[in-house]
Length: 241
Image 1: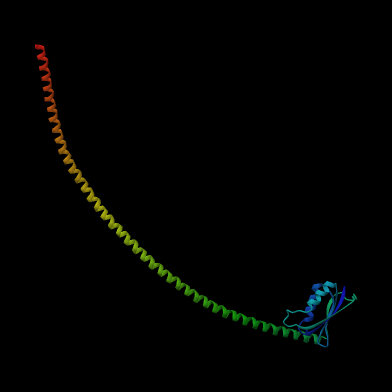
Image 2: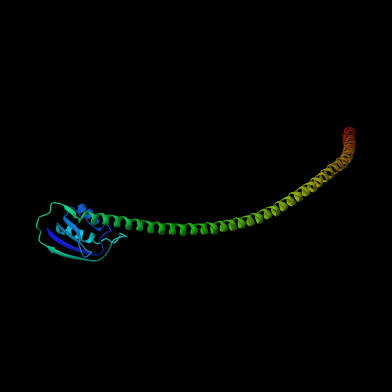
């Protein structure tokens, strides 16, 4: 363990610096005190383990507080005396402490007002930027919708052309089908007529053939009878001899 004597210079009085140091001392578990000095500095005397004490020294120089502005921190190390049981704020006279509290509150209020104004300004800028962005986005959206409508018109026109072509093709198919139907009917009638003619011709041929066959039968019969008479005559002449 060791003791550190710290002198913080800058804007460190009437800005709540002692309260901040006391909170950090309690968080780290070190003991000692902090008090304002007549020359406007703040003195801190603290005892604790080496590593913890080094961390405390680092945190004694805050950079994220808008009211506190430290320009220099002097640190000297000494032997531990063990005289402290806890960490405390050594305060001055009551009127001085009251004045410091009021000054701290006033400065805190000022910082709050400035921060709020800055936030409102940033918010206003963001709102304006958002409005402009929304306006641009809306304009872009309308342009895209117009482009889409234009494309839809082109598609509708192409669909109309396609339907016209299809309708024309259907009409041509209907006309072709009617023509084919007429041709088939004509072919049917011609075929029937040709078959009728063939039937008539073959009917006459058949009749002629039947006549010829009858004549052949008669001639064959007469020829057979002549042969038989000739054979009988030959037989009879031999018998007489």
